Image 1 (cartoon, rainbow, N blue to C red):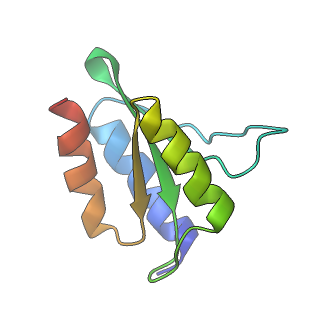
Image 2: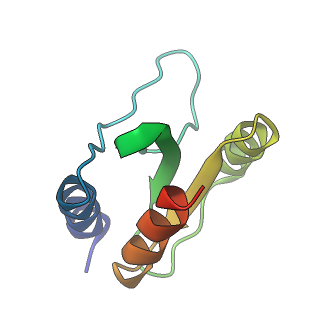
Length: 93
């Protein structure tokens, strides 16, 4: 399974949960996560999608740390099995 297939499964699962997962593009501020996860009732998070076994680059890790320090949840997803747990966690916060 490649990154794009995982990304497609993520967007479908978020839609099924009543939310949206738009592609997050940040010109001039590289390293931001791939997708914004917006769920009903104001639940928000960020998702970095990777091919199985791949890890975020140092700049991506730095951006993840910044977002977490601001109080946001950031998920690195390299397996479709992680998606349900991410959605459940976001919905419960």
